[in-house]
Image (tube, rainbow, N blue to C red; front, side):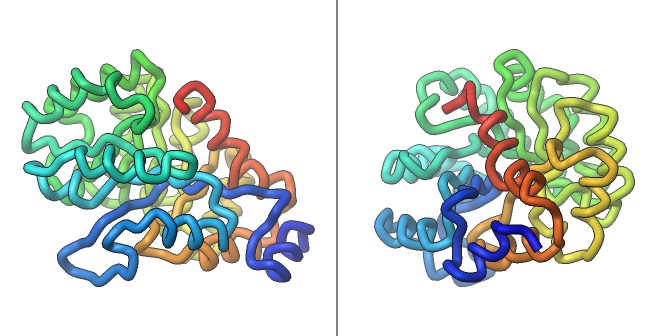
Length: 267
């Protein structure tokens, strides 16, 4: 039992270990009710402070599924709570002209964006598709973070696709959202083969042993914390990591040190 675990269960958060959530969302969604769908800065700040969330990096649902709104939703949201929010510029490969425009204007919004978000399983084109190329090349050149939705068995964002983009764009910092869920061994091999590829824990801790496998095989330095908030609760995911019995040093790496390094040149 580590000391952070004790503090978390006594206070609901840890003062000694801030939490960076590198995988979140904002806004309403058509198939589910979210209590925080209508963004209120004070309400969100209270929720984050209650769980010890220092920064959430998110991509607004509307930027991913409403191309007419696009990344305006991300920009407006971050600027309402800039001390605790940053965003990924959402990309939909079915609208390549919008991707080109977003890349061209990226520098105008460096107070908002730290990189890009790809959701290939929903948009239907592989993460290596040519329509993403302007964003990938820009991320590679600028050392930006690219959060991928990845899933085991997928032909658009499974381990084989991650390998293609990791080889092609070594300068991009690639976060495997959901860590190729279910294909843990392949995700681990990617973490070991590529210094720019990291595991992200959303949906990993619902399967016992995945987190421990990643730490044993690649080290906690290759793992970032993420929840898909508000799809999942911060306390649940923080508690799951702490309950795994890993060391305080590993906990610090996962909850904040690795994210701080990734974000150091971007915020």
